Image 1 (cartoon, rainbow, N blue to C red):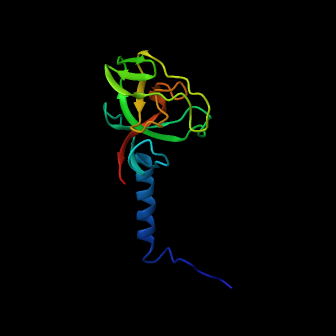
Image 2: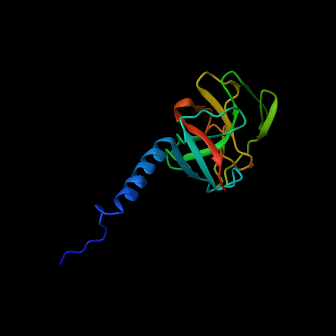
Image 3: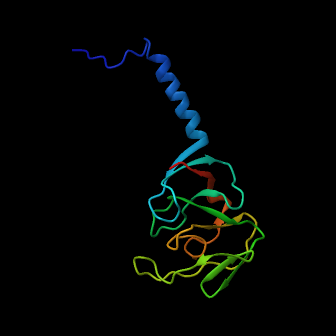
Length: 160
């Protein structure tokens, strides 16, 4: 018994071909990212691959560490510091070019101690990222550190 689910040679062929072409074009230029934490307002983000955001815009990058998220996870944060920006700290309070970016917590939600991030002049090819929520795992912590250009996927836009 021969069961035919789709007749691709008929009227559905152009529709299937169009969807395949749209998927290929969309997948090369865009990515959809989900925010599963409270680090930023919003849940769904559209990422323009290969587009470098300006200071203050959202940036999507790949997580380099292996804890507490899997290596290669996609993070979306606000781009705060560019190469040659100066990062300073007063205790656990961090500043980029004199503007406060928040206080680094001493411990993660799971109880592990959190080492503070780097201070000094951000080198070429690196960026300072931060979330608006106090629990955001961002450049205030050594675990995230300054994000390298090679980690950056592109500019993110909040959808929902």
